[in-house]
Amino acid sequence: MKQRISVVLALATALLVGAPAAAHASPVSAQSLRSAVDAALTQRATKSHAGTHVEITRRDGDSRAFGTAVLKSGSGTDDHPEGWLFLAERSGGAWKVALDGTTAFGDMAAESGLLSVQERGAFTGGTVGVNAGSDFRTGMRLPFAVGQSWGMYGGPHPWGSSGAWSSLDLAGGDGRVLAARGGTAYTMCKGWVRVIHDRGYSTDYYHLFNNISANGLAVGEGAFLGNQGTDVTCGGAATGAHVHFGLRQNSAYVGIAGHGIGKWAIENGGAAYQGSALHGSNRVYAGGGLYNYGALGFTQGVVDANGGGSLNKRSGPGTGYGVVGSVGDGATVTISCSSYGTSHTGRYGTTNLWNRLSDGTWISDAFLWTGVNGTINGFC
Image (tube, rainbow, N blue to C red; front, side):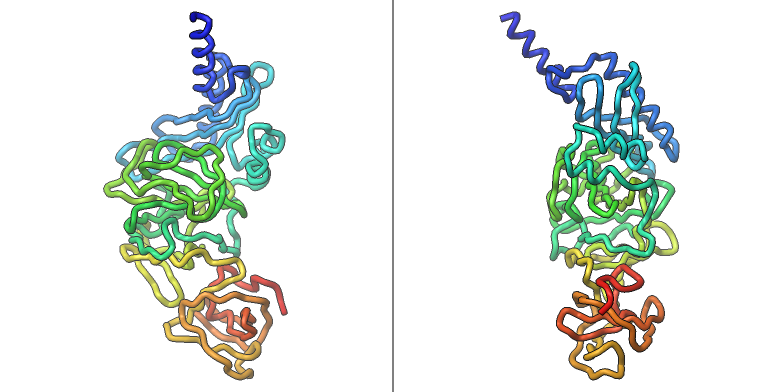
């Protein structure tokens, strides 16, 4: 009986550190790993913090480790925690730690047996802070059910008290927060889930309750992540149930303005938490409701007649061609290819680019929001 109890205790201890019994690491090694992660966090910090939250979620004995690393923000402040994934390797009795978005992290990821093939593909490229440039397509929907309307109670504002206006505060509907696009999910701490997508993007969801516990979980678009709530386990404040939805690219928060989310083009206001969103000519200001139209495809656009109504469709790329129909403001269209024709001025300026739609008709790019200032499916 004593031998059986010893085996059970050994297995339980191994599970606590996230490794099989045969790969159990010593307490001294575990503490040195946490100290090394804390040191890496301090070097990456962009502001003062209120302690760390480190989860070692995978280990290969005393040689390699993977997990989440968070710098907590002060409780009750208009601030949010900072968080990264980390990889660590032990050599010569010391741990080398790399946080995601760095060259060192990518190098470790390429060789790490702790990661899935999907994770290695997502982690082996990119430089911290490289943003969309002139391509603001995300392929994302709003983070709730298609067909529902939620309030945008906070327009573009930072993930915290400073930095890029990367985030929206959303609340309402059935309260179920869903993945804006498919990807790989990680629970950064209680109430905070991150999903890493393609094209360098990732999305953060904070203040959740009943959120999933994920450690590299593959999730599809619309997967349940948690319920809107007021959780501030890793810091910050929440006066009412909502989800703080943040956009990142290449391991840094990027301005959400200009990006298309759920067929809305997000725009900044004069101050944080203000701003608006445009669907065609329909503008909704902070405090108003956003209807979730679903994700805009990478070869699709939303008609913006710059004032409502409808837009003529023509048989060729210019007003010299005959009118062969019309399409309403806010409609979603699919673009087959593009060409140059007569110039027109729309909400975002003047262009002579025309787009051939999937039905063979043409409309001016001046009256179409695609997320790109130019062609999105090649030239005819």
